[in-house]
Length: 242
Image (cartoon, rainbow, N blue to C red; front, side, top):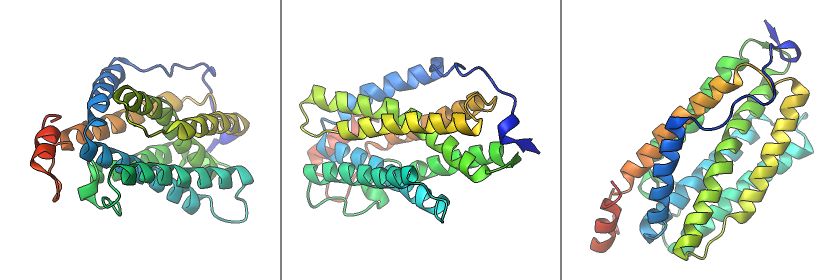
């Protein structure tokens, strides 16, 4: 059985830069984002999908970290992830106050794939932490959080940039600041637990990139799906992003 405190480690500076496949995906998704935020109905579904992902993250924190050992820092993380879901929901209702009252798939982009993203991350991390001696539950929480925060550190700035370029008045700058702090905090906690240079991290990072590539591709492909109340103009515009 592996001990958390004595795992074979990589240097702390192990390679986390995006590989060629990740760079290609980022370029395509960023170009798609710049167009998506200009189409209100599509932007609405995008923001609602991001809101749902934040909500799923907050629920997972509440479920896996509940009990008498939950720390003040974890409680703050839980509260902030819940608030991020609310901020994104406000963007949704700023676009159309009567739309997307919930996270039904008709108001999402690739809803099943988005929900599956977290499930696949959990499974990947469990494969690493299952044999750990010590607090494997805390290790799993930190590793999933680390992967999600690394993704958020890229996604929210490019989303904000796309909105700025399009003259869209909404802001996720508060989310960006808090997600950056979450990443710093989780990396410090990983150091304390002996996870920061673990040899499994590059493999987990590769798997997250694979799962996100599947999600991002599905979202872009789902962009042209009609909503029940979409106008003919909206349908034409949405279809242009297939």
